[in-house]
Each structure stands twice: as C-alpha cells, then as structure tokens.
Length: 447
Image (tube, rainbow, N blue to C red; front, top):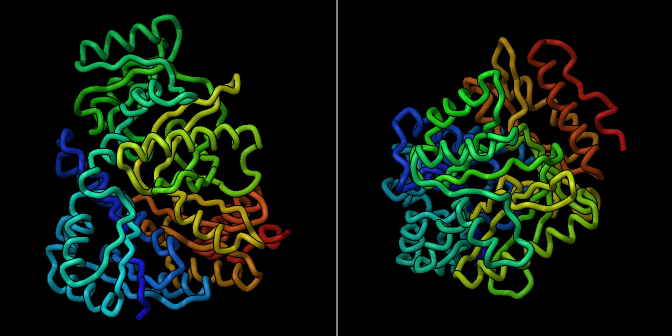
C-alpha cells in the first residue's frame, strides 16, 4: 500500500439534493437520484494515482475492467454502500460493511486525499471517520468553517454580487424578484418591447433551473409559465430575470482550481449546448481563440483571488457566453468539479500525443432492442484501441435507462477529430445493436 492514496467520491446526488430551501417531491427526488447516479462512473478517469473508488451500487464490473484495460492500468478497489437513499456518502456512513471495506482498502496509507464532486456535510463526516482511524485526510474542498462559501458561490445569485466585486466580471442586466407578482412584472417589463428574458432559480442541474420567455402570439409565454410550474428548481424565491443575450451556438468556460497559491490552475473549454442544456465539450490547446482564452484567464484569476478570500478551496467552473458583439458574460459559477474533469484528466494523460479532449455525456441510443455492453459496446472500443485511438465509454449505466444513451470521451489531435471519432463510434454502436456492420469506419480514426 502506498503512503498516499486517492479516495475518489463522486457524491453528485447528495450535492444536487442539498438545497435546504427546495422541497422536492419523492418523484422529482428519484429523478435527480437517477440522473446524478448516471454520471458517477466518470470519476474512474479523475486520477491515475493509487486510489480507491466509492461507486454507487449497480456499476458494471465488466465495463470497469474493460476501461482499465484500455487505459493500461489495474482496476482499483471499489467500495459500494447499500443504496438506501441514493446519497452516496450518506449511505456509506450508514453501512457498517461498506465502512469496514473502506477501512481495509485504505489500510497502510498514512494520507488519504479526497477527490470529491463537491462539498457536502456528509463529506466532512466521512473525513472525521477516517481521521479517527489514524489517517491524515486532505480535503479537496473548503474546510468546514468555510463551507458557507461553497453554498454561496454555487448559487446563481452570487454572480450578481460578484459583478460589483470583480472588475471585468459582467452579467446580463437583470431584476431580482421575491414573489410571483414581481416575477410576472419583471418578465413583462423585459419582453414587452419584443425582447427575451431568462429566468434563473438559485440552483439548477444540467441547464434545468433556467427558462426563456419572449413575447410571441403562439403560446410561447404560456409554455414558459408552465415550465416554471413543472420544474422543481423554481419552487422558491428569489429568482433573477435577466436580458437574453444573443450569442453563438457554443459557450466558453474555464475550470479553476482554487488553492493557497497565487496563480491558479485553469482549464479552458468550449461547451456545446442545445438551448440552455449542456450537451458536450472540447478542451485543450487551441480550442478557444487566443483573445477569448486570454479574457477567460483574466476572469479566472480574478474569481480565484475573490474565492480565496472567502475561504473557498477546490475546483469551480465559470460558465460564460460570448455575445454577438464579442462581449463576455458570466452565466453561472459551479462551485464543484464540473463534467469536464474526466476529460481534463485524460487530456493530461495523453498530452504529449493527443492534447485535445472531446466528451459527450449522453449520445442517444433510440433503439428497439437494448444495447449490450458485451455484444455491442465492447467490440467497438476494442477496435478503436487496436488502432491506437484513445476513446472510452463513460456513462454505461444509461444503457438500461428509459432513454438509453452512451457517454464517450475521446483524446485527439483536434476538437474536430475528437467529435468525429465520438460520432462514428456512436453510429457503430447503433449499427451493432441493429445487427449490421459494427466496425468503426476507418475515416473515424484517420489522422
């Protein structure tokens, strides 16, 4: 056992559910549990160091072994608690057998380094348990006394404040409201002259928690109000109503590691979005033009300094949009690891040869039959690996969901190559399930 070991904890579900002001009904809560659990397996790519994975029950052992074979490394120990609530760390703390397995898996290590999705109260409790066993625990989030900063920066309302604290931090013009009457008035004021408004809740997941209203005669405004009633993240005030900024189809972002140093580590990316919903991303040298990357870097350094002053520590993402006139607007801060983290780690692994990473979390598999990992997924990636292509399936739990899909992450020489390889692999999987030729076209791996 090495002296230091990483403990990888994708506590996505409990991070998304820890909203004290939001009262989710059981159906919505179950949807959020299923949604969050579906992305937990991406954490297997976060670290190449000696590590222990804490994964929700139901992960595919075949997939885990297969992916590590493709990475060229051993399968790390896995601890899976009994899924009583779907909140990973909460269930771990209430499962004596899982805690014993975790103790055995980390025995001999003097220091345990947390790699978590984000700060949550149960995460601090788990750290206390390990410390009581004689381990030195290095958190990757703020210390407990600064936990408030994680909650504050995660709220979309914090962006309104930061615009007055940080030079160059620009947000769309908006109005904050605390009642339905105020909300209706603010929306009417913004869209009344033919404009569009974006209404944002304090929190959201994957683009949910934001809705667009515009003044049209085709029922758009009525559908907007129906959306607000349906989506649980709009279940409490305050809300913000902002001008809709016309922008390109993709949105830039920067992931910032806030630590005690003066100069932060930053990872720049371009997000592919469908409306307000995140779809995919590409990151690495040259993905953004030099001017845009420079502006994002300046913004990232300024936010890093401000977050440091609050006691925040760990990864965060600053999501932006570039207006048609070139102006850069901040849309939100995610005070946690983003969906870019597995792509960041893989791009770092293959940086000398293939410095660009492209990832799509949910390529749809709208098929009459169910996709089998053994019969349909594995052969496609075996063929890619045989050709020297670094592409990996990342979210295989979704194969059996009510909307089957497959996540793919690719390291390539360019963002275009990465996207093309992912799309061709996706088509090859569909062809395999349909019973036609499952081979990956050679064009997908050219160059």
